[in-house]
Length: 201
Image (cartoon, rainbow, N blue to C red; front, side):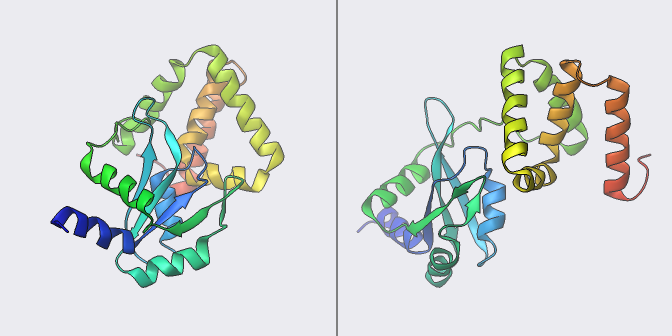
């Protein structure tokens, strides 16, 4: 067994396969969830190399095998975005091959774009929203409305954990002339003031 194989075997013993992941779930969000059972070394979603879209599964690596086993016991069936996660052993041959591919291949370009500094986020989000075709923007709003109607608690949690999504939805409403730009600006100001407990200077 060469070093790469030994490394893959060691990593697979300390990792879990996570399936049935909602496509909108981020690695950070999943890392938080799986961090509830122990320190997460890495969480890697598997992306389709042609489309750049997530395939709906990934791998969570822990420091030791005991924590990985605890994750299988405690997080299998965990609900996120209306789906129940499937948390399983990462030692199967197929899982090891997937992990080897993740290690060997250059990282797939993140479909969400490059990370940006917090102070530049509002401008970047506004530009991204403004560049959407009208039908795509309408579809986005329709899906969000359905999510809120069907599962208001989950939708609220999602917006609280992803303020950039809330801001994007607000911008979409401005572009679609659903709300007045001045009203939107006041909403953002009040939200920011409440969030940080004071005024921005």
